[in-house]
Image (cartoon, rainbow, N blue to C red; front, side, top):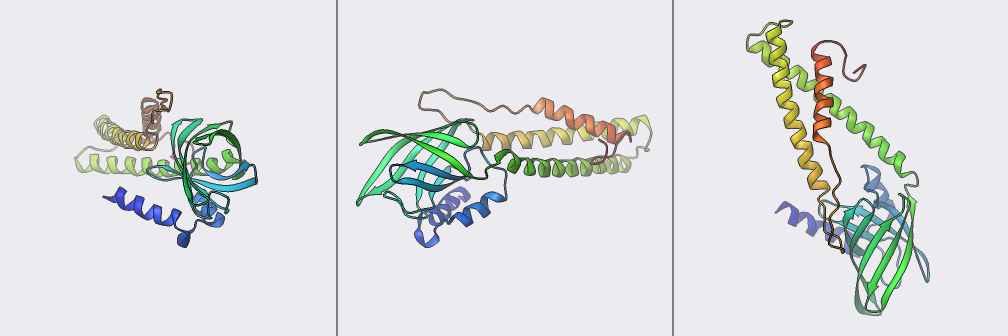
Length: 251
């Protein structure tokens, strides 16, 4: 039910001119999160010059939003809805209005790096190829690096809380700090909590990066390594439990 309501609200926000998505609103929205490679403000080269669009990833899809009025779209219109097939390939449908006639075309976006992609657009008028160039953020990697650091700090805080919690639990259970039994207790409880954390992260990753079938009928999977992630967290916890390091300082 939440997803349905979210889609309805999103449609009202993005497709109605009363709630037109301006470029400043798009930049404000995108500035506050780590971006998928396709997200950002883009310039689309056409026969009548370059038109600007915002591409925004939502929970259920990726929206292409017109930031300028053109032959096919008004400002704030949802110009296209696409899905991610692989790290460099997206496909979906573009919706426009040409002289009062609804126009739907099948589109494929093929990324070249992080600052450009090629659009293959197939409609009843034939197939055309168009180039898109990133207008913002120009330094895509630097933008996302900020959020990676924030995510790492949040995870470090969570691990520290887990360590304190398992120590407290083992003390309540009657194990004396500094003894072998206390160490065994804390390690066992900490390992269980790490497993819960990894399962949560893996579920979230799968929901975010659900692979969709491409037009060629093949699937591409983005890999998350839970075994390596678990071992890294266990290693950090072992050092903290033994007093060899302090998380956020020298771990």
